[in-house]
Amino acid sequence: MKTLFFLLFVSGQLLAQTKTTVELDKKYEGMSLYFYKNTLKMLNQKDDKDFDELIKDIEKMRFVMINKTKEKFQEAGYAALKKSYRGESYEEVMSGRMEGRNFDVFVREVNGNVKGTVILASDSASLYVLDVLGKVAINRVSALFNTIDGSTDIGKKIKDFASGDAKKKKKDHVLD
Image (cartoon, rainbow, N blue to C red; front, side, top):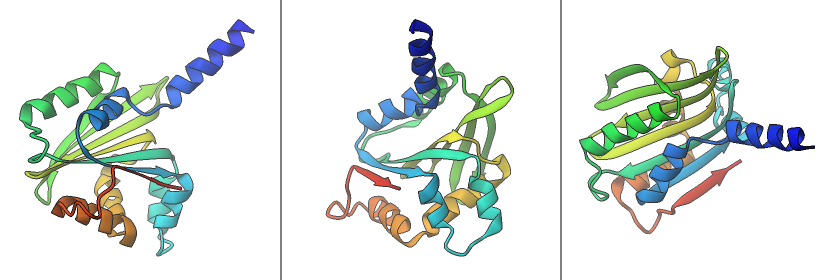
């Protein structure tokens, strides 16, 4: 019986989103969106086979947005954030810059299998964190961001958040 409890406890810990993302969301006022497999499939309104392939290994995803100026989130905070992900056994596998945003991609592997992916995107005004239970093809990270942003409902929430429209902003949104 003790073994069964231990296995269930360990399984639950492996399926959780990162502690770093949870703490980030608690510390800073922003917006969080939660996506599950079915929600991600619904984003594919054009029946794009490439997008289906992109999301096939995602179980769930948390998308956190923080207004860096309003929350006084600075470069030192970004460096500490990256260090915290590394402390959770995430390895930085890619850094880059695209369309005015810096991207950093972290993965956590267990026995050679990717179990978690964290994508950080930062520009002068906002920090975006995609905390994925599962994996995303590294060369398709920007396609995932573009699809989320291009979704009518989600894109509107992101644009409202980025523009600072407090009347339309809410802290947490679950999309499933």
